[in-house]
Length: 155
Image 1 (spheres, one colour):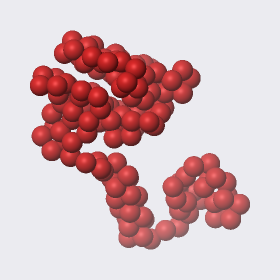
Image 2: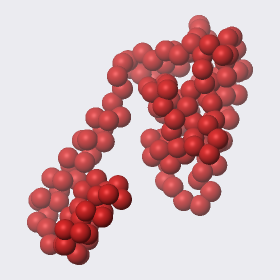
Image 3: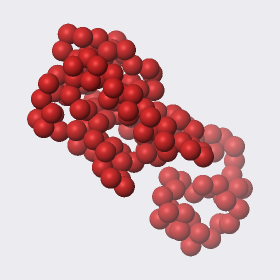
């Protein structure tokens, strides 16, 4: 947050509201550039994949080759679909809100963008089913999306 007010109460309120940083407008540009650079690095490290190969049930995602397979069948995904599925496969137990998914797949938020996530999830499900794969994306009502339980949906 960049603000003109410099009182401690304002900074505390901003940080409690979820701000990553609080800067008053009277800041040296080099310091601001350094803070922005650090935030960007922090964001990249949080999104860094833990492995080159992600596996879930019969599905396998090779991050170094940007490929996705179900068994021996290669499944063609758009870059956005790939990023969405990668996010879920990196943290299979975690539930992601629509906004978290939009940020991860780098879609600008605005009017009607909530349904973009639903559309991508639907297309991913269809492509996976068409290649003999399981139900992959579970909807957690009023919360978001996560990977479905692989044992509950055998191929």
